Length: 270
Image (cartoon, rainbow, N blue to C red):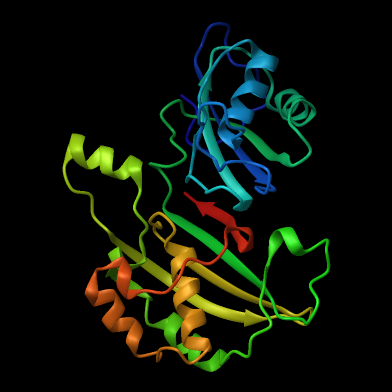
């Protein structure tokens, strides 16, 4: 058996089921998120169609997370199994020819058939990008939240540090219809997540970047964290209020949801 994440250029035996792991980057602007939806263009659906054109097999690739409409990825991971014996290098080239230019496959490798991009993920890293200049260049507009308000960055840093550790993040989770269905089928799901790092960084090109790394993230969680930290930066709430917001376990206690266009799934660790 091929070990998880182990790459092999040797063709799989005829008829054998092979697990595949892809790392993708995409511009999410023109997609209705990752998850396949009826009569809507999604990343998952677009990838499934490309795989079918190449191999003749209809699969539903499983992503490490379901990025929302307008959210981008630098390192989304997808997994699926195929019976078709195809060398990874050939498959890689064929996928990038079959996919639109807004979706690129960065790497392709064979893995154990039981590898699952979401269930096996250990750590995810996201970035949220804010443009601080007076005029946002048009070539950046799809990928940043243009925000020229005065902001208290030290206060935002203090607020960001308050979410490090293991917490119940219910206050920062949007209502998720799929989660509601899963609760009906399997009972309540935990809102507890562990955040390993949570920092703001300024760059020389007028970008303010929020970078967060953790075991996993709830629906809209990163965007809701950013919206709350921006409230701190504008002086609407104090950095110390973040602790009370966490303890409230109520979405009404936190700030507004930041726009999707500034959010990037950066990487997933296994």
